[in-house]
Length: 192
Ligand code: SF4
Image 1 (cartoon, rainbow, N blue to C red):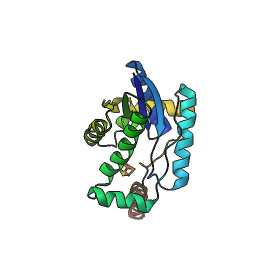
Image 2 (image 1 turned 60 degrees about the vertical axis):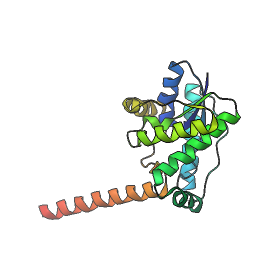
Image 3 (image 1 turned 90 degrees about the vertical axis):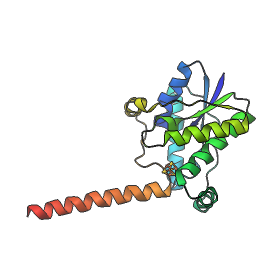
């Protein structure tokens, strides 16, 4: 059975591809993460997937297109304002469509390994898009493999991003950093 694997990044692709190969699937990867911000970061993640795929002999399809920030915001507004559900829908609908057009019987996503994602929403969206395009969505909670994927990324010297990807998550990272810096400053002032 041929499975098209939506890949959000290289590090997560290694363990997830191996999981589905272990179940007997013939796995092909596809990078489709149109709202990664900024564009240089999206390209860097694409390149990292290329390096990971080479290391684990994973065939990959040509990458999907990017998306301007305005287009992403419009999509969120259309879907009712829940940004992560919209993001999952954009990625999984495109993967299901691509899988159907290319004759794959199944599809899945590397998002299933991330402890930072809402797996219940991903499962719901994946199954819905699978039904729409007539391709099986393969769901599994792979979060226990996340540590192994980080370790493997270190061994393969793969770039590991420190924010989820969209502009909102980049802003949240900046806020966390600013909060930590402010707390450190307050602690230092208290010691004086
Ligand atoms: S936080 Fe991550 S999953 Fe949520 S919208 Fe941004 S990129 Fe997508």
